[in-house]
Image 1: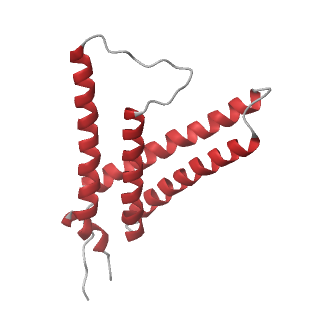
Image 2: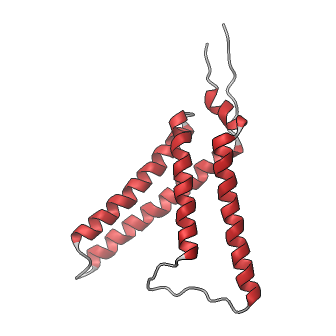
Image 3: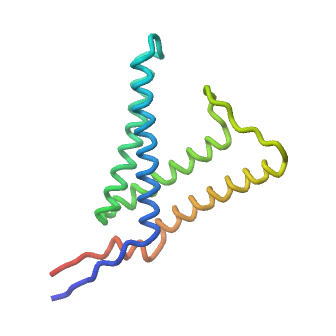
Length: 153
């Protein structure tokens, strides 16, 4: 009788789970807020545009939730869905930093070059953290052992 002990959950997997569930909750809130605002509005965008937007965001939220659940259950599909999910989130963060979407809220304006440099450095730092998380989830030996470990009696 061989007993393989379960490998403890690596910090990379925990952090990935936290990022996935955080973004899923934010986008679920965004979908519900949009639906509430549209219900209150007299005239809004066409129903087709709203449906397409909700389907796209709903699909992304579903992807994040399935990846999260796979990571919770130690399934390999969690790892392989978590990777494109993290890459998608990283690309969305990059896009929002580079091309600010228009809307009713005004953006913070920097008062000095030092503030601008600080903002750029913070953006690079966050991008670096996303890249490290993506690479560790993909290639870390601890993460691979975590997904390979099972308990047999």
